[in-house]
Image (cartoon, rainbow, N blue to C red; front, side):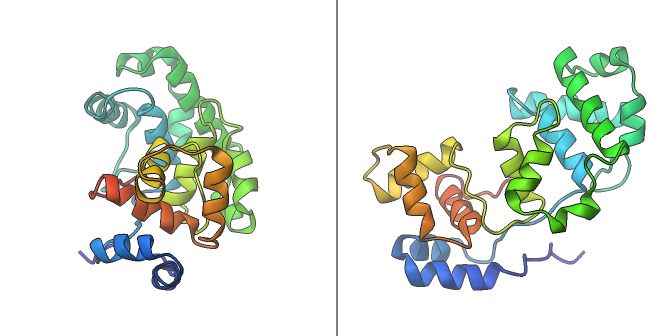
Length: 215
């Protein structure tokens, strides 16, 4: 099996960031040969994000596995069909370990795909903010989840998730001697990394956890 494709902007991004920021240059050099990768289809990726909210990784995996089985997921990576999930009854969703709230969230997500409110074919024409707005119309998807989706699935190059605790911690560690700074300070720092703030964020995450997360 061939390795996952590298985002088309990746080499240009790391060259640019290395040239303008010595701290990022050091981080990029420290983690060679790895990059963002897309793992699954949009619906399955978002469904998994909802399942994993506010519970441990171990618990999320167990519930996810049962949910995939109950909803007829197929393939490797797993692919779920929105129509099938939209038709699932709440007791069936509760039975796999999903809370009543998450069950409603998953059905709402499925309905958004079935009725075309979320249509991946239209997303390339949307800028980042427009796509985030479309995603947060789904119950259970907030701005942070939408930003993670844009970075890890849509491979958008210039997303800057300022509410992410890991990003805040890494910036404090590398740029401010461990001291947290106000949001406006982070925004100002991030401006120098445009148009590759997703890539800068990804390497700052690597400095805290060298193993890349896949969504």
